[in-house]
Length: 395
Image: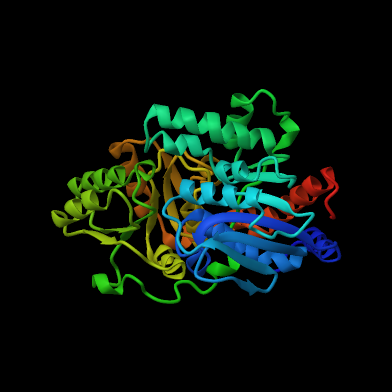
């Protein structure tokens, strides 16, 4: 795809900039990074585009060994992280003790508040990239006391010590500005996270649903996401039940795993039209999205979500609750925004099943230019370089 001239000129100008050192902590094993989840996909895209923007990235992570791939150095501090917080505590201890040798003049890109917390007070400028307020997700999984302590001990400290906060959408920006009066509006900037549109070329490249023995003309309704309370797979099942009672014929497919796996398995046992695939590579997920008639997002809270962008990038109809960028991107020509109840969700799915896939595909082309990852990189790198300049780091 030919890029607009202004975008090309901006990208080319970054190539001539002096290299900027980035420190990027993540509890993921670097050898399996990007096999699932929005942040993993974001990191892989960030690494892939790093040379073009003259970035040198040190990833402090889990993994079996140290490695360098192009401009990205993977520096494991443990072979396996039993939990996010356990990794963060170990990272903090090693940073304070000086066990980790890091490049000078670097900027920390923290993808959650607890990573920013680990680097506090160590002299590195921190840019907090918030893919969504962690506390909003935690309250669906933990007690009020746990959420209160996280906000008090982790989130507030991260906000206080961050030079800039990058918010994935205006709602995330408003969360920080409303909760932390010390923040100036200019310190919190909205940078929507996009996707690499090259990933959608020539889809589907395979048929990852072939093991389900579906006929070629079967209408597939697809749910993709980790099986955690905030993803709300129960709403998806209830909406599909509603559609079956209306006489709709389709096959429903859930791709993902998590704490609600047993409940999903029990639901699938009594519904021959409901299929569960616990794990699938991202490439296969993109093929499944391209094969589906409708992708359904039922989340209670999301900043993106990634699967919404992947549906739009694939030209597949999408039905979503009002989360993340859904209201911004989902027009009546490509999908529906629905309430978090089975009736409304079923109405949206039924309407999109009645539309022409070819018309939806053509209509989605207008939206793809607004979800391009290169735009994310342009804005994010500018913020990272600005944060480095604030404390005299080379830029």
